[in-house]
Every structure is written in structure tokens, then in C-alpha cells.
Length: 68
Figure 1 (cartoon, one colour):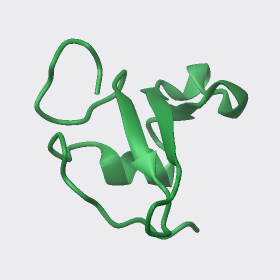
Figure 2 (figure 1 turned 180 degrees about the vertical axis):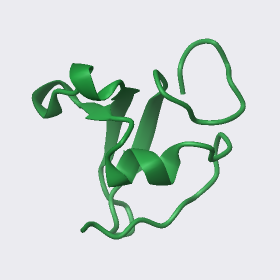
Figure 3 (figure 1 turned 135 degrees about the vertical axis):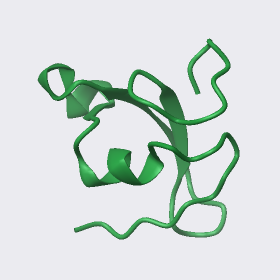
Figure 4 (figure 1 turned 90 degrees about the horizontal axis):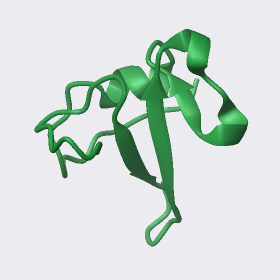
């Protein structure tokens, strides 16, 4: 999550995503405006499926996501 201590994921937040395997790697993503998205910099568009799944989730909440 971003440093402003929001209670829910929203655009401009940093999120940590754990891989699908038990003990999978944790990756950090920044949810940004689509014009600012850059996969190489781990900035994902707020309109992409992963971001849409995460937006609105509570801090620490587990969510399920199936890659398209």
C-alpha cells in the first residue's frame, strides 16, 4: 500500500502480490493511470485486469486472480 495508510487499494497505491504457488515470490506493483503504465518499472494501469481485481480490496485481504 502507499505510504498514506489507506484502508483500501486504489489508484496510485503500491501493492504486494504473492505468486500463485505456496511460498511464491512477492512482487510489488504501483497502480497508475493508464498513460503512466510501464511493465518494466512495475507500474500497472488501473484499467488492467490485475489492478481491477485489487482495487477496492482491504489491506491484507487475499484476492483471487486468473490471468486472461
